[in-house]
Image (tube, rainbow, N blue to C red):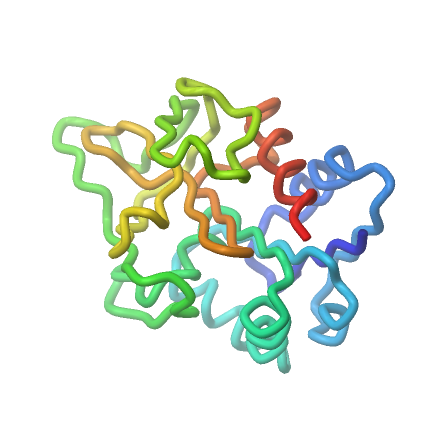
Length: 207
């Protein structure tokens, strides 16, 4: 197993790397800013912290990285995990401080959370509601398991089947997405203790 954790200046790399090493102690992890390192990766992880547009610009600034992602993830079907804004970038567009194009791998857009009377960002531990409980990415997770969130914007899926789990914060917010070889979480699995480890192990078992 060869895991590529993409470094484009917009992710909590140290914590994400530590969580991945715990989930796959026998695997090889490369924290990389080189598109070439995706060529032999068996699993690819894209973290993301900050604003949607800034993260997209950071990813676009890495020579050949988006082209390599398209080739390996979309073309070759290599399992892919997007974390927080790394998940949001899977969608067609983000509406944070204007309209910004995402990778467009999943139909939908990223909008500001509307939760009257509640503080934004949505920050801290919250419960998961499993909307596609039979999905293999959710194996071992239970209704009501807790995960750690920090976000002001949320993904709105055009196709309901792409939303694997939600969390409640004034309204139902997308917490986990998935389709084919893609998985993404709005929460941080590296900060979500047992819930995060279960999800990462399920991802790393994908082939």
